[in-house]
Structures are given as structure tokens and as C-alpha cells.
Image: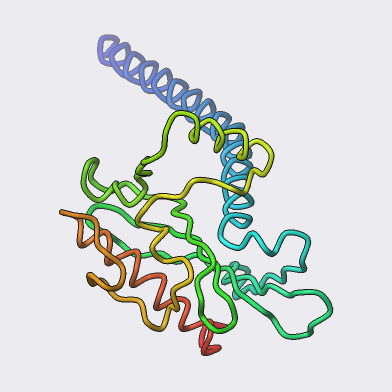
Length: 212
């Protein structure tokens, strides 16, 4: 009987030690998460603020009204001067591409003309779908240096990827992948179409007041 009691005590001792180890590990993880959560949220907020200026740079200094549904931001109305009617909208479009959800911020005028597109996040295949964020440089070293100084002076004037540049000044109602329209990234039609479809469908919902 003594041997059995000793065995039970040993098992309970190890179980208690294991419990303490797990408790400490969980506490450390929770503490680390709480410390990094605010930093991550701050970083995401900074990215979105910079994107807002890029997708509709004319709005700097204008009034922006946030439209929410169930506590979630759906889109932003952009007002110019004293005009009571919104003159544009800024929204985030999401759709699954080839290997990830592609999240894009878009600015449009009230007639549907796109003023800017900024891809916020994606994890598509490097060398293929990820090229939706590739910046193709055709300038000289001098012109590149000039762009850097411009960027420091006007932080919203950012060189955009070729793929997203194609959307600017086009109307969302007429967006399509074609030689005359938006040209898909070679070897990444799925990623290209995901961006286009999400921009078009979400934009049309807003213009038709079906997403309020």
C-alpha cells in the first residue's frame, strides 16, 4: 500500500508541475499578445491613414464621414467644401485570390470614377500573384532620387504598382480584364481578377446604396 501511495503522490506532483508550467506559458503568451496587440493595431491604422491619402489625395483637408454597420466600418463618404452631398467614397474591398485574401483600399468619385487603389494586404505566390504589388521602374537614377525627395515632401505621393495604376480614372461600372481594359498580370489571372471583381462589386453596392 505504501508503494502505491507513493506512486499516486508522484503522479499528482508531476501533474501539478505540468499544470504550473502550462499556466505560466499561457500567462506569458497572453502578456505578449496584449503588449503587441496595440502596436499591431497602431501599425495597421497608420497603413490605412497613408492609404486614405493615396487613394483620394484631393480629400486632404475635406470632411470624411465613416459609415458603419454593426460597429464595423463599411466605407467612408467624402465631402467637398459646404456641399451636403458626398462627392466620393473610400472603401476596402476583399476577395480570395489564388492563395490568400487580397485586401484593397479604393477611392471613387460619386460617378464611379476611380481616384486611387492601394493593396493593403495579400499573400499571393511570389513571382506570380504577388506581382499585383510590383513596381516597375522605367526611370533613371536621377528621376528615382527625385521621387524619393517628392515622397518626403508629400508623403501621399507614392509610386504605385503598375497593375493598380491601370484602375485610376476608369469607371468601376466598366471594369473588365482585357487588352483594352485592365491587363491581368501574366500567369496570375486569378489574383488579377480577384482584385478587379472585389473593387467593382463593392463599389457598385455603395453607389447603388445597397451596402448601408
